[in-house]
Length: 112
Image (cartoon, rainbow, N blue to C red; front, side):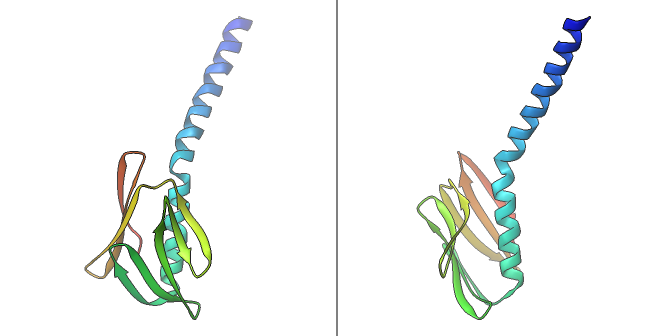
């Protein structure tokens, strides 16, 4: 009986750990999208190019670009996302979308 209780606790612990590791895999991307949406919501004169977003944010001209394997906000160097292979931006019907590739998977999401 004690063995079955210990085994049951171990199974529950293993399932919890598995769910936590799966959540962390996309946690950075989710936070980056939230930050990017906040920046865009507070910006004006947004210019969308395939390799970069340029805008006026808090009275300063900034750009969101890929630098090596990172997505960064330049007018400084704030890292939004890491370990990406490629990122591109598109404007479709006054909405801004970001496509990025990470670990062999391609993601496409509306950011504004």
